[in-house]
Length: 464
Image (tube, rainbow, N blue to C red; front, side):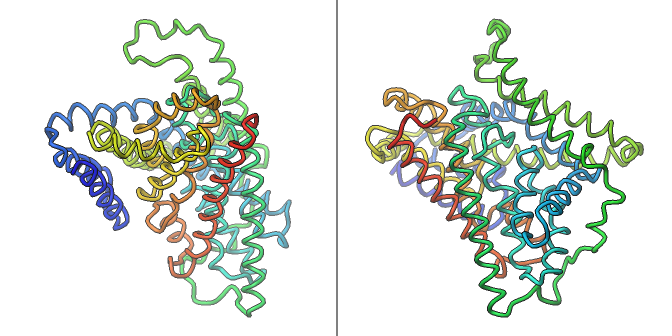
C-alpha cells in the first residue's frame, strides 16, 4: 500500500503540473497524501520534514536564482543580450541562420543569462533572419530552446545555471566537475542539434514551405539595428566577469581555511559551499559592472527599480517551485514504501556503477515535473547520499555522478508542460501543434546523449 501511495502521489503531481497548476501549492499536498497512505502523521510530516528541506534549499540556492534573474534583466534592459546575439549572427552569417541562433543562445546561457531573457533577446533577430531567408517560422522555437536551455545549461563545465550547481551540495564537487565528460557531451549535442535543425529546414523548404503569413507577435525589423545598443566589449564584459570570476573565485575560496565555518550550526563544509560562494561573488560583480558601464540607461531610478522588481518576483517563483519539489522528495524519502522503490532503482545498473540508475531516475522525474532543476533536486534529495556511497564503493569519481545527473536532468524535462517551452512558444507567437515536434526531437537527442555518456563512462572509467 505504501508503494502504491507514493506512485499515486507522483502521478497526481505529474498530472497537475501538466495541467498548469502550481507545484508550490500541490507538491506539499501530494507529499502529505503519500504520507497519509503510509500511516504517517500529516502535520509533523509537513512541519518537520517538508518545510525544513524546502527552506534548506532556499537557503542554499536562492541567491543564485535572485542574482541570475537580476543579471538577466539588466543585460536585457541595457541591450547587451541582444547585442551579443546580433554579433554572433553577423559573424556566422545569414546563410548559417540556424547555427547562429543556437550559438547565440548557448553563449548567453553559459554567461548566466536566464532562459526568459534569451528568448526575448534572440527571437526578433531569428524572425528577421528566417523571414529574409524564407525559412519556416515554426522552427524558431526549437532553435531558441536548444541554445537557451540546451547543452550550455548542464553539459558545459563551469556553467552558472542552477542545474549544474545543485549537485555540488550533494557530491562535494564544483561547477567544473567532469570537464572531459561534459565537453564530449556538448560536442555531440551541438553537432546533433545543429545537424537535425539544418536537415529539417532543408526538408521543409524543399517541400515548398516558407516563412508563412499571418503570424502573431511579429517583431519590428528595427530589432537588428544596433545603433542604440552598447558596444560589443561593453555587452560581453558582464558575461566574461561571470565566467572568469566564477573560475577564479572557485579556486581561491577552495584555498580558504575550513575553520571559517566553525561556530555555524548549518553542518555544511567549505567544500559544499565553495561553488555557491564563488558564483554569488561573480554574479554580483557582473551586475554592478553592467549597471555602471550602462549607467545612462539606468539613470532613471524608478525604471531601474521596476526592472529589478520584475527580476526579483521571477526568481521567487522559480526558487519556490524547485524548493517545493525538493520538499516533496524529502517526504517521499522518509516513507517505508520508498525502501522498496530505492531497492528497485539500485537494481538498475551497468556492472557495479550507479550511473544508469541515477540517470534514469533524474530523467524520469524531470519529465514528470517538467523541470530540470526540480527533477535533479528531487532525485538527489531522495538518493544523492546513496548514489555517492555506491559510487565511491565502485570507484566512480563523484564528479562523474555530478555531470551525469546534470545531463540527465536536461533530457526529458522539456515535455509540453515545461514552463520554458510554454514561454518560448508564447514569445514566438506559435503553438505546440506548430512547433513542439522539433523541440521534442531535440529533447530525445539530449536524453540519448545523457545515456550514451553513461555507457561511455562505464566502459572507460578513466574519462572524467
